[in-house]
Length: 171
Image 1: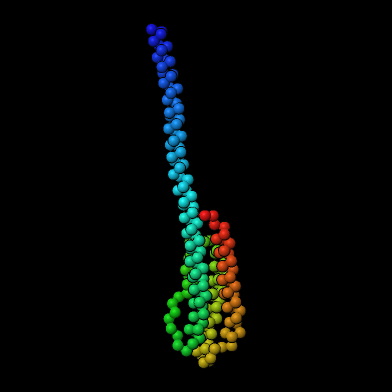
Image 2: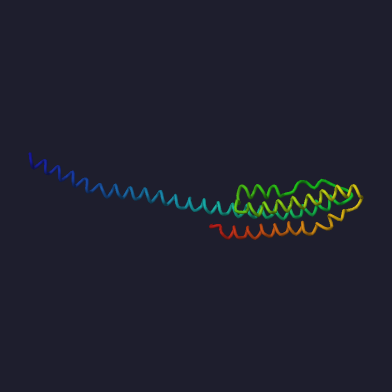
């Protein structure tokens, strides 16, 4: 009886030694399969996020330059004899793009918003005065250049900061 017990113990130990490499190999294969799918998905998500951010920065800058053009149209419209509807400024789109996708640009967008508001206030108040006196007021002529330069300076700062943000995006 002792011999059969020893034989079965050797067989069980032999069986265990043969199955350990198989179990370890299967575990390694499962880990390899997991990482083989996880790494590409992880890097694709990072790449897609970087591409989306660059696209949104481009969209933001396009709206910045449309807002600059809108300011010129606004000035010409408000100070002309016939006023027409020119729609609203694209600046609101710049603000929400910055808030949602590019928070690094919030300070520059705020400066642009303030310069934009100061410019439109000058034009609107000059229009009211023009209606009263029948001519473009001297106030407009005196303040126009400084208000316009503030807008252009804010746009330049925003453009420069956008370039820095784009360079810092890892694809």
